[in-house]
Image (cartoon, rainbow, N blue to C red; front, side, top):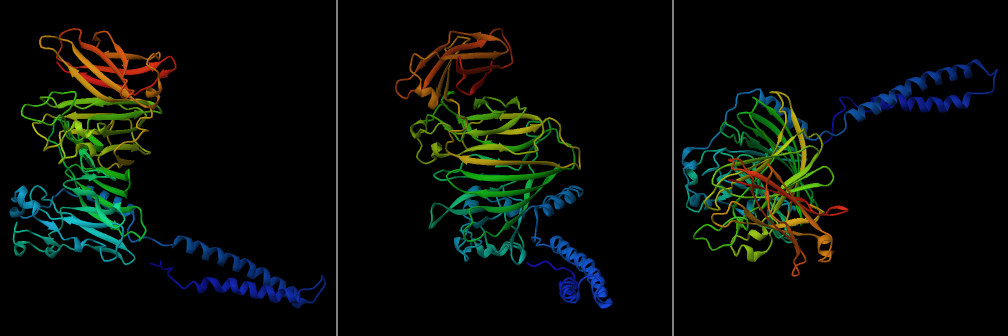
Length: 547
């Protein structure tokens, strides 16, 4: 696409050409001082053309700079669209009732035909398939592709789908739209596409890297998740996909967010690999002030694990997509909080001054700890939010809901700004989501790999068993001057602390008993880390004991 200058560039070149031609001629007629009047006149003419030609040349260069290539759609255009939409009343679009009435099994029968994947004919490394609306996914989205021809709508056509007898295509209205989309990329093998990302429902999306199975989700924004008001689920309603090049390693796309309280513009850049990255820029505009704003929210499932009992009738030792929350403050302050599913909703806040990142991790990678070949919990990804510039002061909030099975997500972690913007004011943030199996830099210190909590009937104290590991810890001899620091808030009864090296895997085990010093209805927050005289060797483990 070439930008128009508004008039012919030749008009700007003529004075410059004239300048050089006349100067050349003038030089031939110049002579030493005292030459003819004609020579002096040529010198005067030269000076006039010098000024005029130089000015024209500078004007030409300025116009060229100001009219350089402008892409068909910029992220700034999506931001402006979100700003305008914020001033409009919110109105959600829904699909016909017969689609919403589809059962889960009926909806699963509707499949996108692989031969109709977007960019399939061009054999590009990234290709996209779409989800049909229906069942719980009753808010349609509109999708566009951006290429050299400009911005083009991606039409909804029933022939793109195999309905499998779930419904009759003749009943479907035209221009229905889609419910979401999948992104495919040759992740495992160069000659075979694999699903690397899925955007479906409200602002939810899931991503995987190499040798992973889908697990926890992320969201565009969380509104009033732990507030007194009913939680709001704004939706990503429009997407614009930039057509990638033949050798592209990343996919760029924009999205528009809309909800009762908020609108927003999102810029996503997906880079698949052994660790898949999703770079995010978001600009939010609020129609009203929510009680709670959640930035970079992560949603996962924790039913039970080694720190809880096994529910009656279940043979699997553990069932969870994530087993802990990790966050980093400043350069070297790392905190690990194991997850737990209680009998009621639990909300935990962690002050986050100088926040560098946070995430929900699946640290337990031993298949035998799950004993489930179908669900493959040992290959569920961890997700780390690497904070970019422009984040306000605030706190990390962890919400743990009760659950009776593994079918629903019950864990939410997100950042809550200390002070939200007023309606109409933009809130802009940047961050990168890292989806991985393991990352030795998260943290570079020793880490807690296991938390076990034991309680004897009739005893008020609980026995805690923690296993710490890391390269520096494994290298220490068993008689190293290593000791555990245990703190509590409020002050609690802490029993004798034992530190012992495990000769099997060279990890270090910490055991102690703890319980409330006085009867209380509030939880007791414990903290523990390993250190030598030179300083801490591990992250800080923290855990709440509930009455």
